[in-house]
Length: 505
Image 1 (spheres, one colour):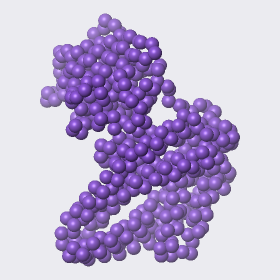
Image 2 (cartoon, rainbow, N blue to C red):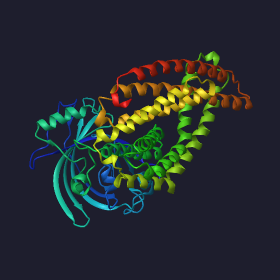
Image 3 (cartoon, rainbow, N blue to C red):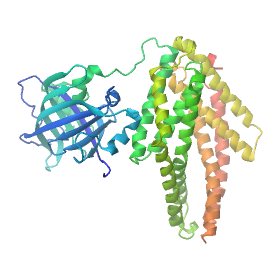
Image 4 (cartoon, helix red, strand yellow):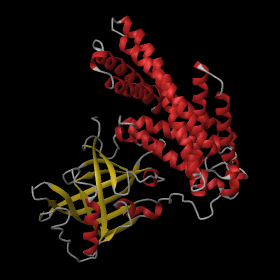
């Protein structure tokens, strides 16, 4: 089956009093014409696991007949007003979710079977809103809905709602202008993100939220929930080969692992040790693909900065071939990991961790009492790593500074996790830690970059390529590394003397 087509959907839904007319929006958002309604009868069957795993994450999966976009639709939340919709045409067994869509949501379903959970019939009256040039700005629909949900007890419901959806080419900010006009006309924003959630809303468990006086465990689990959500969203992106998806997945992996390690006194580190190890394994499976992305982008920027007379021979063609091979091998490895049983076991383990967290006695303490010690510990580890780098040079210094960078990243992640409790008190310290991390990240790029340039020079020489340019870039990277070490020294002094809570050490 062909890959799903993707569209960005920006819309808002509104409640409307029974018997009232559809608001006229001429003059709003550049609208010059509001067409008479075109009627469509839409018949949609919605699919989810029996425990509503998709709905809990704001995802809808349906098979819809009728209207101009009949087919299978998978809707993934991007923001409050924006969703990415993936579409497949109607084909095959009408009662079986296409395998392409099942695989895309595997990190959400955890392998559970997708079954019909609801049926909606919508009598839609669509008004096209167009500008002076005749191009569509938005579609305003008057939907008359009949819904039926199955389960232990059947549910029937009927309602009417308005939906304002911007054309993909329209400026997103127009939503606010249309919103004001519709509310002034008597419509009220719908409390439901979708028709499905309106029908089954009370059957879907609410997302956890921090209370006014959270425990240490509450704060750490909230951070883990956030990173887990980020990992699953990136999982879909990797499978779709979306830009930056592998990077986002690696960031989520690092944050999950860092949070488990830093707050092991809150969420029992012995109970999560194997999970942290599996996260490390997953990160390694994604590393080659991401490292290739970074190396190709960085080297391209370096070549752009050189005068053309210093770029000898068909160098860019040579690099294109080299990185294309590397990227294909890395992507194959990443996808093999995501489709394997080991990865499925990992996401299931993450899900169990959040459903039944192994909290310690410290995790049950108040947040302020239970989180200071882990933060103090991570700050001390950063300071010790910096001290260990003094007096070193050459390769040993590069390795030591890379360790400082990793400790700084872990400290910054810890500060982010406890922001609901210590946000203002740690603001300056976090900012200074991030500055150190960024500088040392750039330094590590020069270390890795020089090794890549060395390998490219060897490979290029074997193919008869003039490798002068690689040597030139190698030397420039060495000079830049020295300047970055000087910058790190200045930033470290600022971090050491900067504002922070006294208990942080």
